[in-house]
Structures are given as C-alpha cells and as structure tokens.
Image (cartoon, rainbow, N blue to C red; front, side, top):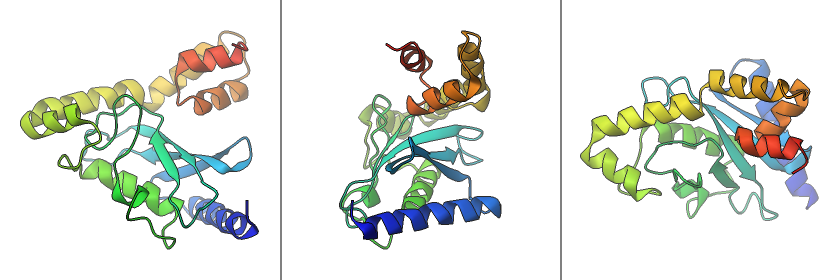
Length: 197
C-alpha cells in the first residue's frame, strides 16, 4: 500500500470519528476489521419513511490498492429487499461504485449514497430483477416484503438476540460481537467460527 493511500484512509477515518463525536454522523458509521486499513465495515441506519426504517444495515467495504482512483468494493452483509441490491449476495448496483467513481468521493460519500438509494430505489437499473419487477408491478407487496426483511435481518433487537444466543453458549460478549460483525450477523457462520470450524 502506498503512503498516500494510507494517509488518505487515515484522514477519512479521522473524519468519521470527528463527525461521530459531534453527533454529525448522518446515520452512518464505520469499523475497521482486524485493524486492517483496507477492510472496513460500514453501518447505515435505515431512513425513516421507508420500508427500511429502524433497520441497521452492515456493508462490507474492501479498499483496493488503486484507491482513491478506483472505487471501494462494497456489498451488503445484511440481507435486504431492494431492487438495486442482490437479495442473495448483497451485491450493489450503484453508478458511483462503478463507472461514475471519482477520487473526489470518499467512503463516507459512498455510504451516504447507499443510504440515499434506500430512499429512492432505481428499478430500471436493477441488481435484483425479481425485486425490481415486484417494485414496479406490486408496490404494496414490495413494501410489505422489504419491511419484513428489515425486521427479520436488520433489527437491532434481532441482532442483540443473536449476541445473547452465542453468549449463552459460553463465549465472551466482545468475541461474539466481533464474530457476528465479521459474518454480517449470520449466527450460524459466527458460531462455526467461534467453535473453530
């Protein structure tokens, strides 16, 4: 990794931390994975007045060696029902994460763009054709399904329940939280990791 990239990433981290201390985080936050400057987890609060309200969504962020000249690789770890996000893999269809990326953008602006995408789905440029079709032809069913998925996969209460389930198996809470973060709150994968499997 080049020194200029390290400096840029450290500056972005510092900006996140300062905004969080001031309460100006706009409903997004980040966490380094294993103190690795090129692997982050982003967190997005679901926007109010959307089916994603009260959800807490985790995004995996891998920063390529060419950053900031190439975009970060981002995908949702938290399952979500959205036309521009794969309901199976979490892959994201967003222009600034592809052709429209500019070195003037940052990881923060990318997360804010994802949060805006939750407010304004683009079904004519889908990542998930099934969801996009439902959005265009059965909007009420789309909203109902998106709310159910938010409740089932992105609810902080559900996440705390998963923490407690693994703590009840005898693991320390800090280790459990780290394992769940690593695996996008997939309880089974986290348990296998904790059990050494």
